[in-house]
Amino acid sequence: MPEPILRVTDLKTHFRDSRTGADIRACDGVSLDLNAGEIVGLVGESGCGKSTLGRTIVGLERARSGSIRFKGQDLLALRGKTGAATRREIQYIFQDPLSSLSPRQTVGEALDEALIINGEGNRAARQARVLELLAAVSLPAQLVHRYAREMSGGQRQRVCIARALAADPKVLVCDEPVSSLDVSIRAQVMNLFLKLRDDLGMACLLIAHDLAIVRLAAQRVYVMYLGKIMEEGQSADLYGQPAHPYTQALLSAVPLTNPDDEQARRRILLSGDVPSPMNPPSGCRFRTRCPAARAVCETAPPMVQRGAGHVALCHFAADAPLGAL
Amino acid sequence: MTWLRTTFRVVGWPTLLLVSSFAFIAIFGSVISPYDPAAQNLSHSMQSFSAEHWLGADNLGRDTLSRLIAGAQTTLIGVVTVLLLAGTIGMMLGTLAGYFGGWLDEIVMRFCDFGFSVPSLFVALAFVGVFGPSYTNMILALSIAWVPIYARLTRGVVAAAVSQPYIESLRVLGASPARIIFRHLVPVALGQVLVYASADAGLLALAIANLSFLGLGVQPPQAEWGQMLVSAMPYIQEAPRLVILPGIALTLLVIGFNLLGERIALAKNPRAMSRRKLSLRRAIFKKEVEA
Image 1 (cartoon, chains in turn purple, yellow):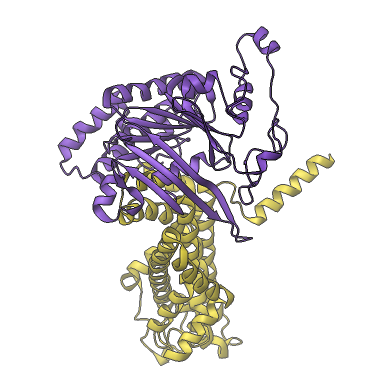
Image 2: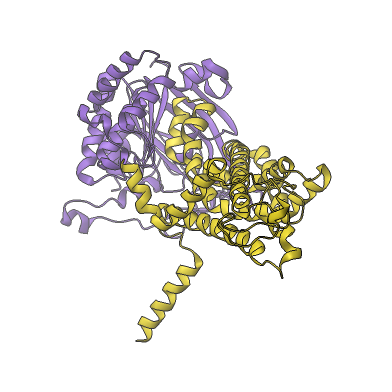
């Protein structure tokens, strides 16, 4: 197994609550690997810290501790011009493509600016590259003169992807890249990510709450809850034999297309709200809402190996019934 | 010429006529003015409306029309200079505070709080009190007093824009702070500042007249409306026109600037309606409900 292109180890990103001064532990000791040419899913409820993790990786938030190793270098220790050049190889795709494009720039201008920032000095070369970038995301060249508001949601998101590609990234962090798009457009944009992976060998961290989208694209999946990774595994293992009660609950909330199956299956309804990340529960973070919680859950759970690359942060992960769903 | 048509539609012809005629008078004042505004002719002292002096002459026999024209020049040059100075410095401070945040933001905003807690006119008064009354000192004083307004306005706009994904994606792309500030944040802030400044100009014209009226601004023999008012005070019984005419000029200019500002603000953001219009609307709505 080669060294992963991006390795996040025990990353902590905390925010300070301005009123109480308490730490909001948005991301509280997360470890995650991303191999070259791999699409990895990161799923969880809103507020579980998955966006914070993505934003910390690209440097939009400051990490409290831990390390982010990219191509063998620690991103958190990098400074200055070379640091910026390295960091540029990880790009970010936002959820809302309209607000991630400047309202006063045309598509051509936005892509041109991204190329200038990336150090391309020659005007003619930039113009040619802009057309290449548009072609790479399957957009017609006529769109160069359009403003963001004059395009459809899918076109806007493609422009955002093209702009990210201007920096020649090795890793794309995509924060809910399709959740603001029409269902009919989602598959197109997801296929674009698959194509980029196949053509350019790009690695992609796909942050989403839509489990079906992640299942479609990701080879491996991480499940996050309240700032911690609860379960990780190959997509097939995790969806087929979820080991963590939280993953099981998440999966049981996905509607099935066959109404008979839908009638027959057992749904796990979680009660209560996600606890405050300012004061997370001791021991297992999920124990306050877990249907299987017992006294032992008040102690920190171990990472239990379930299969090849399939681990879950639960006391009972080893003896959870296989194929419970 | 579309921009001209757009301006016309947004601002409307009465406002445009009012403001542009003042601008015309200020720019071509020395050409159209019939007399030297400072030239005394004691034989024409206190002359009323006449063919020689259309708007009469004051106690020293100086032509009132020429002095009104020169006053427009003095006022408008003052207003424009203060807006340029205060706008530039305020925008610089506000942009830095909004972009970098942290302690810089704290310092700039506390400075602004101080500026807001003391009325602008008092700040200007204190400055002139220390450095002595003159046209230049008045302009400097007003600029200092007006900086916090523009710093706070810009800071608000910039701080809101900084957390927009399009600015964040520029940061992820590796854009330098200078590029983000000058290419993206300043243009956004400039729009807001221009809208505010067009409404603010009226207030500034009043402040200039105020200071000059108190003898802290423009010094005689330079003509200025507030200064004309105060020097005509002793003759208010004998020749009320000497007080009324500069007053009318000042009122028209302030009305012009206020209308301009209101129209532009309304065109940019229809919800930002003046309280007057809102209460009018509420009254109509109430009537409809009762009916």
